[in-house]
Length: 164
Length: 204
Figure 1 (cartoon, chains in turn yellow, green):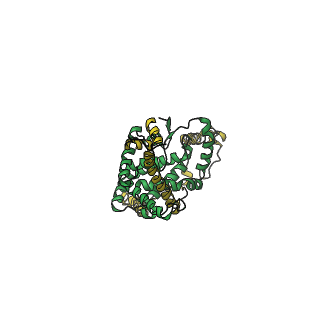
Figure 2 (cartoon, one colour):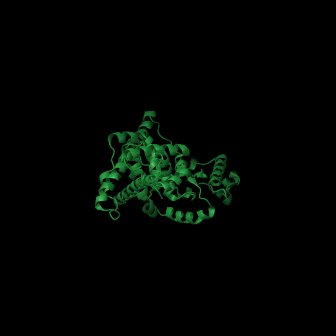
Figure 3 (cartoon, each protein chain N blue to C red):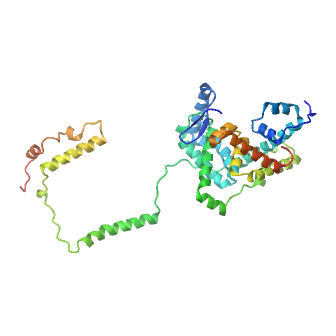
C-alpha cells in the first residue's frame, strides 16, 4: 500500500463508495490510497459511534408497549346523554302531540286474535325464508315440524277455543 | 434492481436470492412475529431510534414505534418472509411517520410543541470500553455534530441517510420501501453526505 497517489478521489466518488455504489476504479484507488481510505474510515467511525450511542440511549430509556387490544368504539358521554334524552322526549311526547284527545284504546280480546289462513301461510313462508338464510344446510324448522301443511287443515286440527 | 413484492400492508420487500435460503429464516421470523413480547424485545429500540432521529421527536417516536409494532403484530399474516422482519418493520414505521407528518394535527403540534432529543445525553451513551477518556470527549463532540447535521437535512434526506447508515439497508431496499427511483435515493444520499461533511468538517 502506498500514499504516493497524486490524484485523489473526489467527494462524490467517496460518497458513492460510502453508499455502496462505488465504481471499480474508485475501489481500486481506495486500496492504493491511504489518504482516501482514512477519509472514508473517519466517516464510518463517526457513523458507528453515532449508532452505538443512539441505540444505547434508546435502550436505556425503555418505553412500555401496550399489548394489542380490540378497538372499541366509544361515543363521548355527553353525546350519549343527549341522544337518550332526545329519544325519551320523542317516545313520550310525540304520541301526546298526535293524539290530543285520544280515543279509548281498543284492546283486542284473546278470542278475537284469530290469524287468517293467509296470514298463517305468510308467516310460515317468512319463517322458512329466515331459517333458510340463517342455516342454509340444515333442514328448516318449518319442514321439520311440517308447518307448511294447509293452514286450513291445521286450523281444523286445533281444539276449539272456549269463547267461540 | 432486486425483484420485489408489495404485501397487504403496502410494504415492499426485496426477495431473497433463493427460496431454499428463505425457508429457515421465514420459520424463525414467523415465530418472532407471533409473540408480541419477542417482537418488542427484538425491534422496539431499533425502530424507536430510527423514528426518533428521523422525526427529531422522541415522544412522537414512541407513539409511532408502538403503532408500528402493533400494526405488524396484527398484520403478521401479511408477512410473507420475502424480506427480513427488520426491513418490513422499517417500511411500516416509515408509512406511519408519513401519515403523521401529513396530518394537520401533527403540523399543529409540531409548531407548538416538539420534544427534542437531548443530544448531550445521547452522546454520553458512547460505549466507554472502546476509547480513552480523552478520545471520548472528541467522540462525543463528533456524535453531537453528526446529530446536528442530521437536523439540518430535509425529511427525505434524513430518513434515507438513517436507512442507509443506521439501518444499513441497501440503496435498492431503500428505493423499494420508499417507492423511489434508485437514482433519486442516490441523489438524496449525496446531498445528505455533503451537508454532513460540511458539519463534521475534517474527515469525509
